Length: 300
Image (cartoon, rainbow, N blue to C red; front, side):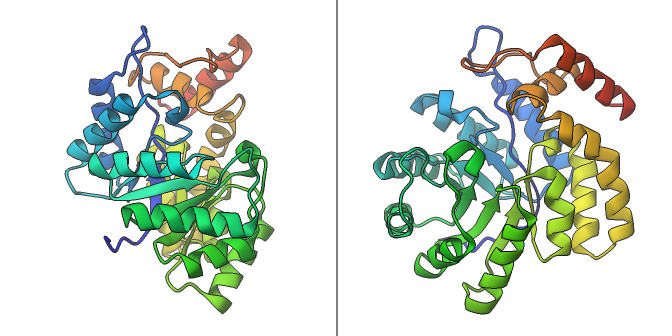
């Protein structure tokens, strides 16, 4: 298993589609290059921001292979591979590994609401099947259940392949509890990553290691600079960039992610404006707000 340190600025990239709904691989390559030029530290493909739920197996493998080839070993490629069915999560994980991914982002099982014992067994089975580094993705707003700090630390201790968490509960208190629990009881070298862009700076100030980000799609250099300033304890510069991007961070969630960010990236000329149902085009009043925000940052 690869020994990867998960830290810094990690975009969860969108999946570009053509107007007819097919994958737009040249646009995907362009996006990856934009992220690399912005100085990101890793890249997540086929996450919720990448509309992974709408991809078939062939498309899933294709986009991972495309990103892996374009990255060419410069940074780790992390593939979203989660499911609320352990067998399906293993299936996606094996596909991701076959496509060249370096690590997996595994959302905690949604809808089923497993117990802590069930969660530990879920991650054990995935780790046993693929032997890859795993990042837990705790996002109660999407899964319907919140994995508590003691359970996240327990999974990390009992499943050595689990080396990080993308913590998207929206609670800084919960993030602090995870950092404290891991510091006191292990596992060692466990990374706590923000799952909310606006909380990345405060989390790093509290001991977090970085962020798996949406806004990084639009402003990879600004976001990467902010994260690295924060990790270097240059909070003055980090704060300046945080507030420069804050409105865009918030606008990205004015409707369900990734609707606003795909609208923005289309306005910036990177992609065609195309989503897969049940997601659809942004409401006109919100389109105007996205456009105004991009203009203020001189992105269009």
